[in-house]
View 1 (cartoon, rainbow, N blue to C red):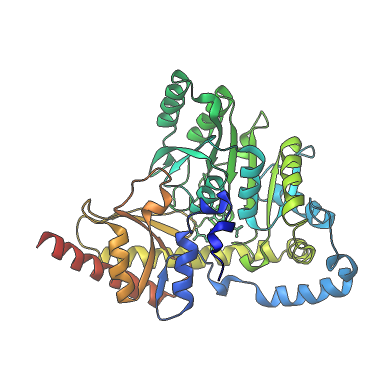
View 2 (cartoon, helix red, strand yellow):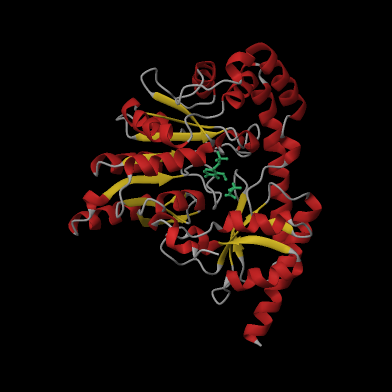
Length: 408
Ligand code: PMP
Ligand code: G9A
């Protein structure tokens, strides 16, 4: 057998497996309760509507829906999306570029490939979305991380950090602020209006792009009076991305990105070389789901399902966790963020938890510069109510055993 490592590129040598994706493999084998990956509750998929729409799309638009299509996206989809974005509060100007992507994960990859060189800095919250860390790290990016509180990124610390970077002559290597300002993954926090404005002022002062990743604001179960950064952007600095994964179905692999035309056209160039275009068929299906009101009528149900599940998880944490454990109370999204007592290493805890039949994502995965060893992200959208209670009970049991042996 050849020694395959001779063939590996420098790029692939540098990639560390995603904890979220690796844990999915354990879960797929069955027998384990997963509080790990952020999978939507399958009961929220409008299955009948998608079945009906799929058949009709093939019958009515088959010639185009089954054909290759432009890299930007199918115009029927893009026109429907532009209208829909306006309805849900995301201002996409006529002059803005808009592009269909294979999930927002591809949009993250395209941002990295179009705007980041090895050694460039991305500023992000800590903890930050792992999929973005992975996509940017693959480009050789470095990270400047800003701590959060219950309102998300501490923009006062961001200001301080940028000032220091300027005095150290680093600021030219800082390209962008990447943020999930609404119902953050992994922390569940939402950035208030004053911090949003502060963030945009700093982006302007330090001449940075802002990448706003927004999969969850449409399914927030406790509404906050906040506007997307894209809507507040007076200068054309924000690249906005969202997805149909949480409001329709992730298996469609359909996301989108909107922003200054010049920037989107650079991302389009990269996309031409990756996958030619986003599947035509799924764009037609989503366009019909928008235009027939399927998504709009479905959102209240999705919000209700996740609000209930969040409540069940919070109650279970309240009931089972030993003293010294703290957690967030998310207003949307799919995750609760947990701080264990300082002496707990959550990767060690995960080993015990797997033995008890429950998995979660160790929090350090979301810290690009290290740290967070005593934290964890727990998903509440996918498990059933019984699994939520039982999963938290098993996790608490593993934790108590670990604490007893380390303190004993
Ligand atoms: N960004 C964030 C913040 C997410 O939570 C997710 C999904 N977990 C994604 C991007 C990627 O989603 P998709 O590729 O399915 O659109
Ligand atoms: O399955 C995935 O990778 C998407 C979910 C992301 C997450 O758990 O944050």
